[in-house]
Image (cartoon, rainbow, N blue to C red; front, side, top):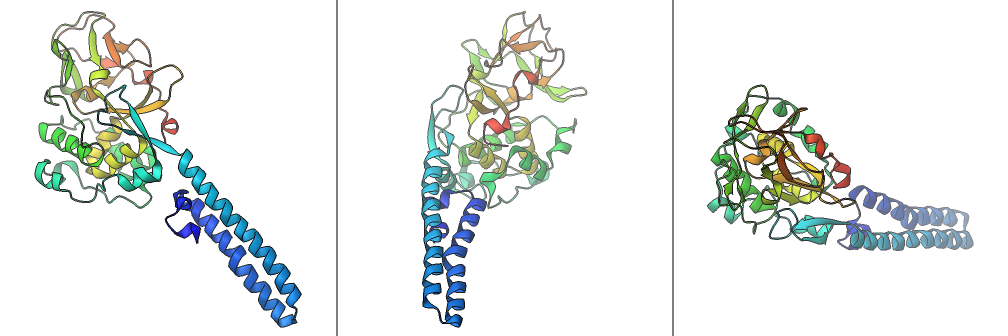
Length: 331
């Protein structure tokens, strides 16, 4: 009974909850009924009472342990849910996974904000929005990547550059299903972001031969100069934020979202976190001969390794940030 109602026990994973319920039911209902039937046929009240009491004792004990396990699981299992500012280094609030699942806006439901303020979904251009499954909080990165058939999309080198309609819909979706209070940069996402007091970052987006979408220097860049600063661009999210966003996006856009997500530690010995960005900075390609890199894997600020000529492609090496989905709740 505890397993089937909205009690702390209900916060156990679904499969575990089913196992607890079936075993408890077996011990408290089936076995006593069977033993009482046999006792009745034999005319033995003693056999009935002994076997029944033993079964009920063990069944009740298991129910009690299941309930306590639910309480413990509820208190000890948490995900990071971002507060108003999701920029790197922002504070995060620990909330139980059950509360996260219950309070996140359903991406498959219309909202007043979506009807009034978001860019219209271009199904022909971006694909269909998939219905969110009941077990969505259990899905891994690879589950989503496979379900959305993202491998084909990732290898398509003819994908167009994301236009302003794309970025507006992409950002509006994040605000609708993850963080309605987030404030994006005033610089148009097709142009980048405000990197520092001098203005925008020193690159622009265009199609890169053999690589698809990429970034290119908008002026000559000197060795040692800051080329990209993730502190001013990157957004941190929790595992459930990531899942909510993925299931709220059209198929092709969801695949872009998965490509544009990475895991990173921001300090030595620190927790791995999930990051993405909502402007063209996310289009930087990887190379075995990069010209732009951070000083360490804990940093998001990237510097020119050599002089970079105007209109030369900006390249980094993705391997600097190890992919650790198991460390962030997406394995």
